[in-house]
Image (cartoon, helix red, strand yellow):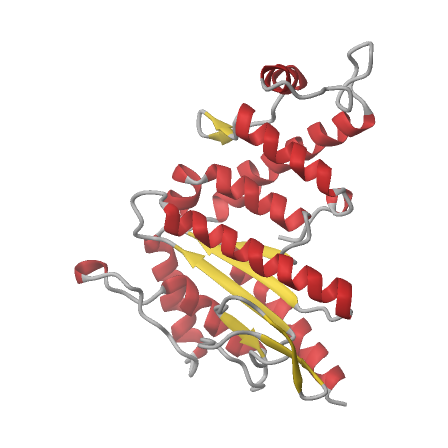
Length: 282
C-alpha cells in the first residue's frame, strides 16, 4: 500500500491531533475501525481542556483543518476495513502460499524457521515468502536477507550515518542500501504484548532516522514495512494498524505491505530496486 497523496504533506501538528483523538475517542468499535465524529472529538477536547478553535468556527461548522481530519479518518477506516483486513493471513493461509511459491521458484535464498517450539515450530512463512519473491525478482543481484549488522551509509569511504537498529533485509547490501525492510509476522501470538507494539515503534525510529538523512544529506533509502497475522493485528491490534497507516502518511515508511499484498505488489517494487541498482552502476 502506498500513501494517499492528499495526506502526505500534512504538518506535524495535524498528526498530533490524530494521535490525541485516537487516545481519547478510540480506534475501533464492534470489530471495525471507526470514524470519529466531530461531536465526539469536541467532547473529548473539552474534557481534557484543549482548544477547539482550530477544529470548528464560531458557528460550530468545521474549519478546513477540521474537515481534513475527518476526511483522513474516513480514509483510514475505509482502507483498513475493506483493503487491509481481507489481506491479512493466518498461519494456514501463509503456509499454503509458502508451499506454492517454494514449488514454483525452487529458491536458493534463506528460508528461516520461526522461534516457536513443539508443534508450532515451522518455517517463518511470511519471511520466507518475502525472501523468495525478492530473490526471484533481483535477477541474481546481491541481497542481504538477514543483516546481522547495523545499516551504514558512507561518504568518501567514511561512515556518514549508522542506524540504531538492525533491519530484516537490505538490497543490495546493508552498507549504502537502495532499500531496507522490516517484517512483523506474529501467527502464533495469543496476546498483543509489548513485543508486538515495540515492533511498530522500531519502524518509527528507523523512519525518523531516514527522514533526517534525507533532509540533511539528500540521500534517500527506500523503507518498507511488511506485516502479517490476522488474529494479532486485526483482532487485537487495530489501534496499531491505525498508527501504521498514520506512520505511512507521516513519511516514516515508503510503503506498507499487508499479508497477501506481498504477492501482489512486492515483485514490482523489487524490479524498481533493480533499475535503481543498474542506474547506480553505469
